[in-house]
Structure formats: C-alpha cells, structure tokens
Length: 436
View 1: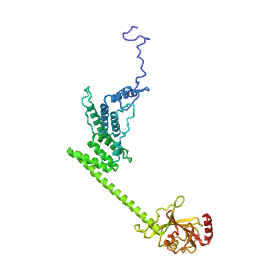
View 2: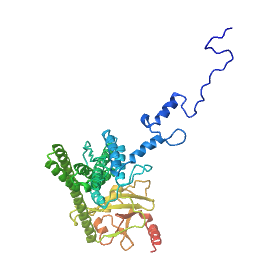
View 3: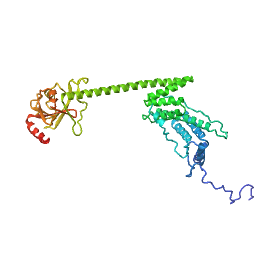
View 4: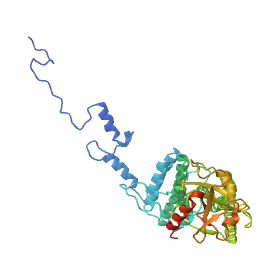
C-alpha cells in the first residue's frame, strides 16, 4: 500500500501532550475558586491560597492600606467608612472610622483586630455625665485637606492640622454610626448613646463649633435623659447655624431643641411628683408613729420571716391627722385546731364581738367554737410585758391595744381564739412554753 503524506503509518506513535500541573484548575468550579482568590475577581473574601498558605496578593493589597503618613492612612480608612455610611452599612463604617482613629494614634497594626478601644480621657467621662433623641442621619463629613502629596518637604504644622481635622471628622461620623446602630437595632441598652457622647466630646475638644458633633451629642444626651447638657449643645449649634445663615441646620437644631425642652419639662414634672409623693409618705409615716406613741402601743419585730400581710397595714383613717381613728391588721389564731385567719382591718371603735360575728362559725370543720354570738369562745392577746391577757369581747378595740395592753408585732396584732372548755389546758401549755 502506498504511503500517504501526512498520515501516520500503522503502529507509529504521535506527539504526547505535556504533563498537567497538579496545582492548576482542572474544571470550571476549580477555576472559579482560583479566580475568587484574585482581589480583582473576588466575590467573597478568601484569605488562603488553596494549599494551606495565605493569599499573597490579598495580603499585599491589604498592606497598601498602611503605606504613607498617619494622615494618609487615616484618610484612606475614613473614605472607606464614608462609602459604607452612604450605603447605610453602619457597622462596617464604624469599624473603618475606628481604624482611621487608630492610625492617627499610631496604632496601625494590620494583624490586629480592627475594633479599637475607646480613648480614656477624663474630659470624656465628664461629658458622659450628660444626655439623646430624634434622628437626622444624612450628615457626613468628608473634608480632604490633603495638600500636595508630591511635596518632598513635610510641613509638620500642616500635617498636624490635617490629622486633627481628620480626627474631628472621624469622631463625628463614628458618633453617627453609634446612633444609627442604636436606632436600627431598637436596643434597650444605652451603650451606643454613651459611645456617641464620647466621640462627640472628642470631636468638640478639637473643634468646639463642629455642628454635626453638637447635634449628635444632643441626640445621644437626650436619649440618656441628660437634657441640661443637651440644651447647652443645641444652644451653641443653633447660634452658629443662624450666624452662618444655614437654614437647613437652623431648622434641624430648632426641631431638636423643641423636643429636648419638652423632655426637660416632663422630667422636671416627674421629679417633682416623685419628691411630693416621697414627702407625703414621710409625713404619713411620721404621723403614724406619733399616733402609736400617743396611744402607748407596743411595737415589736418578730424572730424569723414576717408573715405575708398582702396589702394589709397599720394606717390612720385620715393620714393627715395623727388623732384620727387607727386601723390595725389582726391575725386570729385557733391554736387547738391549728388554724389561722387574717383580718386586714380592725378599727379602734369596733369590738371583738363585732369581728367574731363576721367570722363565726369558723371556716373549717369544728363545732367547738360555736356560732356568731361568740359565747363558746374566749380571746387572749399577748401584752407588752410578755404575758397573756383575756380580752372582753365587747370592749372597744382601742382600749384593748393601748397602753401596752397588746403587742403590735410585725405589723399586726395576734388574737388567740379558744373554745372555753380548752382554755385552762392551753394556758398551762403556753406558760410552760414561755417559761412562766
């Protein structure tokens, strides 16, 4: 058979493809994963190289954030924070502003946690003793002030001015983040308001006329019910806005001022009402003590847990007059039956007969206590001297309790109610128990 040009002869071996690099992707999914490690193609953060190492290109890109002067590094983070704030990504914006402030303090560490501790400044603590409220969240400072980067001679005064301006802006903007995080999360805790006050205080220490810091500090202070310092901040901000003829800022300050003044009046009324109530309660307690002393009623505290009186208490019918009728809770004890009953109010003009008529027959199974006339029972109270006294059922209660004739113990007077047939045995046991 003739040999055709270009066609391999039977049994001849063709050229082999080069061996495949095992580190290269072999399918579409692996290719996409590899591309995602390149910063320009990233759709999600991947800090590895896929082989147990770090992503060199990403680390190099991150390191660029820390190239340049303190101001240049801080300005870069501030601009990233501004971008996040425009998208209402307040948490990331706060972190970028924090990194900017760290850079200005010389704390740029690309391996450190991006969240920085708050500055510990005595002046901040003083301002934190103050007050927050309405939202106005569209103010974002973005001053540049970076000058000519091509200059080889560093003007230290100018560099310091730019750093201070950047710090002022970042503090005011981070305060906005704190407020927005508080508003959007609807938190009951007040940490973000305190952080906002601290950041505004730091900004105002640099620029006392920073209108954003004044406004945001007033918001935070109002939320903390610190209306006095909030009003001071608003007065300064409103005066500056009017001097600049800034109608938008003037309207914002005036609206917040009205709300703060309303809150201040409400708080003043609340404080006044609380003080009036406390004074009234003190006077009532004083008159009650005078009434007990005037009647010679012995007051003692029992050993152990006092009984649950619910809403029962010793009180005057007219709380403004120590001579008015006294009401006392009474505990009826039925020692032979192991039962008791609380009577929340016994007036001085009433008698035990009146009380027994409502109680008897007893609310438990027993016939020995008789009917409502109380003829089958005797009543005893403990005296101030520690003895027992038999109480006449038709004697006014005031005569029973005055001049040490009965003891008011733990806010009530105890009356022992016994069937007549068991009185002698019970008294004998009581005397043995009490060493008499």
